[in-house]
Length: 46
Image (tube, rainbow, N blue to C red; front, side, top):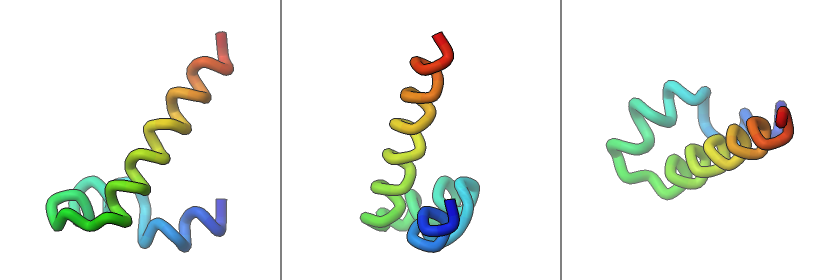
């Protein structure tokens, strides 16, 4: 979690409110990885 937090340049709110509107490639990668992680977590619960 520490490595991911340092690579994503802030928390998920920073990614959604700052990186995506600025069309930052790192923001798109970070948000995509978050969504994939959420999907994997939800499938793992079933």
